[in-house]
Amino acid sequence: MTINLTMAVILAALYTAGFYLIMQRSLMRVIIGIVLLGHGANLFLQVAGGPPGVPPFIGMAGLDEMSDPLPQAMALTAIVITFGLLTFLLALAYRSWVLLGHDEVRDDLEDRRIAEAVAEAQEMSAAAETTEAEDPEDAADHEGTSETGESGNEGDTGPGVRR
Image 1 (cartoon, helix red, strand yellow):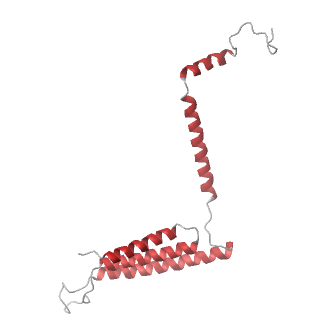
Image 2 (cartoon, rainbow, N blue to C red; image 1 turned 180 degrees about the vertical axis):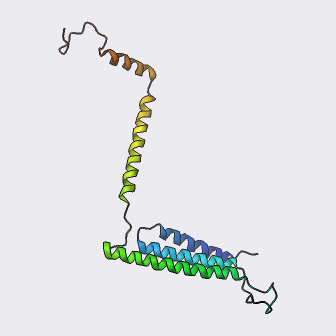
Image 3 (cartoon, rainbow, N blue to C red; image 1 turned 90 degrees about the horizontal axis):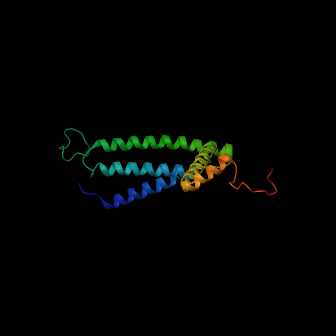
């Protein structure tokens, strides 16, 4: 089996453009991306089927001369599935345009809240880790003064000290 380099490049271009368009926010671009992926899948199936041959009817030709009907049947099925998906997506895009006035996909507010909560939790854990990572002797000194509540100077008679 030989690999046709031209077909491989065309398939790569179709899949690349299709996946790029699917990741866009505009529904029309998403639909065009799905159409490109569908065409890429059909072309892949045809290339995988091998070179053309005689129709596969028993008695018309030898088995070596017949073409494989399976890739053609799969391509026909892929065409039907792509067409059904295309009509469904076009209906969704039209409905979105009628209701919202545009075809942009908006961010999900709940996803944004979850992302903010996760970022806040990570900041708090990072701050707790840096506090624990400080010098343990300084932490022991601070703990000794904080337990007694005094600074250690007995003769301190400042303005805020009561006797």
